[in-house]
Length: 416
Image (cartoon, rainbow, N blue to C red; front, side):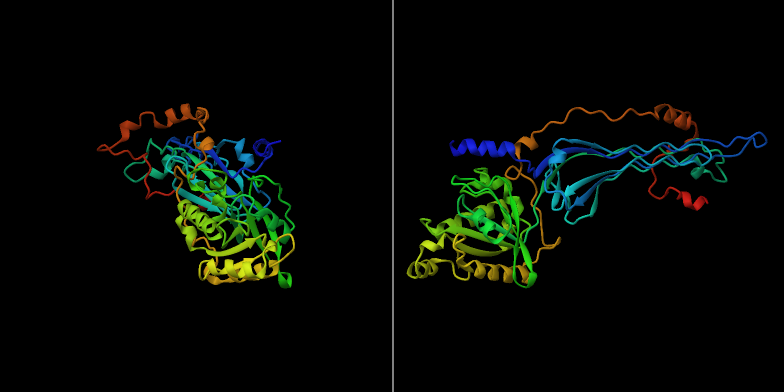
């Protein structure tokens, strides 16, 4: 079977999804009530319309047990519940149900229309409020005064917020492997960790990123990530590297892997470096280490000759994943780079590049949502009753039922 056939078979069997487009809609706020207290012996009890409930939020929550965005591939629409309207007796409407969406740690959110960065989830249990539910409207009892004892108006609830977003998964690792296809990245990962990536003798054997925990001295360890091979032109959409280059944006150290039998070792290193710079210029600020793989075929004279041609100041190690040559030395170099305070990755040191034509996945970017109308408004009749004849009570064009930022809904606990 040719390697192209193997490529498409592997892609079809893969469940790793790191880029998905979804439609989110928060809940709208419930309307305030325009109710007046009535009792047998209290003919003029005054206004007692309660506030409407707030709409539900859309919340993203990090889950360390998730490794893919596959569940959201089949859940394109995420809608929160609407808040209920208030009623008499200062009864507050019920808040809309929040929707909590579990995502893998390292998920970044972008606006699907503009490509603008919105938020990210990096730790287990971390919650990010993606879309805020609309506030509930105030009931008419908020508007009573000495000069207006019978306010016949109330606020409507704030509308829902609808937005198409793109979720992009960037795997969290200390070291990211960068190299051409068949440079020995997967072999190295299997040699230094318990990970068992697929290894075959055809290009692009690695179809999806792989993570491995590399043990080090004194029961210490670090995480290494392997991505599909990069070829020249990857930043323009060639090969598979472009789709998975996002995963090394969070790595503290980049480990470049070039085989010893390459025609031009320095030339291949510069090509890889140029592709990373075109993808995201900030990758140039990361610590870099060069590993010359398959070095078991070199003698001391060739090693010295190759070392003389390498860029000055670039840490390099000659390794062989098969014989174990240089593996311990490579771990030492990587550990020093990882533990260097200058290379530590924090939320403030990462600047996520906006999504543009080079960073989008076409099949997701062109995905068209079905025309899903908002849920039936069961409160339409009540809303009509609330605002009926309200115009009779406006003064000088004032619309007191509109939202006023200076008026905050009353906390129900204050009424106890």
